[in-house]
Amino acid sequence: YELAAEVEPNFPNLYFNLGLVLAMSDQRPDAINALTKYQDLAPKEEATKAEELLDSLRRSLSTKP
Image (cartoon, rainbow, N blue to C red; front, side, top):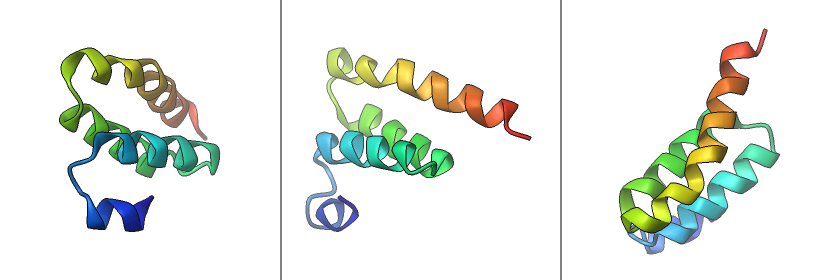
């Protein structure tokens, strides 16, 4: 996904999928960045689907020892 984002940097779904992969790989700060980029690029009504995941990732970072 990172390579695809270099080729097509304005395609929001790349960043959503990248965010999911990074979250599952326990790379939470990078996942948050990718999902935030997705929200910036996606139409407003679609961008909201990442909000719950972003909230969960942010909470997990704040409680991480």
